[in-house]
Length: 605
Image 1 (cartoon, one colour):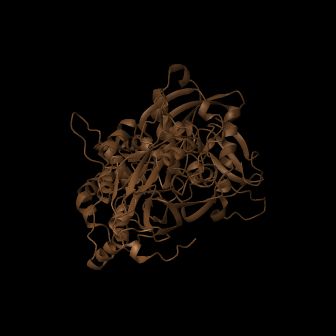
Image 2 (cartoon, helix red, strand yellow):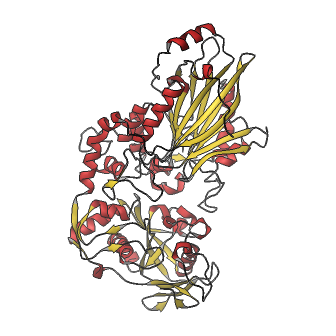
Image 3 (cartoon, one colour):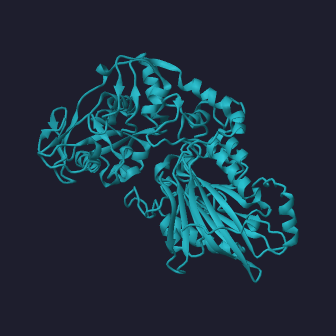
């Protein structure tokens, strides 16, 4: 839906943006001709403004890959980081007028890179040893960019509520979460919304209500951090409560920032009564919304329209990918009717920051922090006897995955009670990165961080043999069915059912085959423990990360299974500690080929 050419005279008129909990935006003096034009027309009937949007920045400040210790590159030629996005924001403000532009984020800000980890754990923003903590680099960058609001993402809770609250206190803009409620009072634990005023000379202010919604999956994925403290009802349910409230406050435009995708899907099965990716449902089922900034799913959706079921009005949605790959621009035109502003046109597009220069002020403010993290990730922790690559980890049992399994099983074993220590112990882990590689020779923190990119902690849970087989059958739906006698193409083999790499668990400690010639649900063959067939009533302790243990990706049985062990230590740090203690990483100590893909019983590889 392309936006028709706007009246340039109205487009460049000066306005002022104000709002609670946000630093007042600076103003730009109008050019003499524009100033004269404003004086001649002091009763405008039309006005325009824009809302710029980012999402899933995951603490990408600069165009840098800390795992590779090099400038970021990918096959699509993207750049990352808010430093480049900041330049696009400046360009939009210069083109449209400083006070015609609002800036909003849709969440997942403070987790995702080594930079994020450093300021959460190594030199935490909450302080350590009685010392005051530093400012979070994302707070510094986003304050400089003059964000007006940001929704809470699920990853905001990964480091605990104390870290999130400290980050919130460092921001000059509100973190919004209308469906993040105090568990005891059921009152909002964060600001549900903020209202911005766009001043129009000689006419009423345009009031823009910005409502923030986060993901109900936080209740599962960060159960250890939020259980008993916060609850997270559905997006549709809370939007139905707050959108009418914003309209009752006189908002001329109601804009939502949702940390929730577009397609109505859910990754947790029926564990929660709420939908994970509900932005399309919010648009369809909640009247009174003009536009929605979408996040969570790391996709680029430039412009998408949903018709509201009650009013028939079009709701405009846009998702600007992730990591600073894109910037969404929502453009609005309004007309004044009987003293009230009405939206007459709206359009969205995404802009690519690739090729623009990084904002020099962000570089000045945060280069020292960046350099600290670069030095940290290049710290050597030991050596490796041979190159360990994850390139084939999604279809072969490779030694680098057994490294993860070994650390998980050793850590859980050391913490089990005497009775649980007598049970067979196995491990589950997913191939998070196909590009991960631990080189022969010196092993640094970045090598290990590149293999285990998430800040997951470790659990030991109990499953029966029957439940274990169900679990592995669920994992095996990751593969497309390939009939016997048909050549297997690894480029098209995986990610069936939209089951992504991070969702696919392999097991260690048991042996099994995955027969990809068979239909889903009938693929696990020859499941044995210590050479004997696993029985349905046999009980195992399963080492597994907290995301999976709490229901992430919808695996059967695991979320409700009895807990034998839990730890607040990140698995990545346990891997670093393992190499540090042993001084040498040698696959002879842990590599065991215990699973393989077959077609009608014949090994594929």
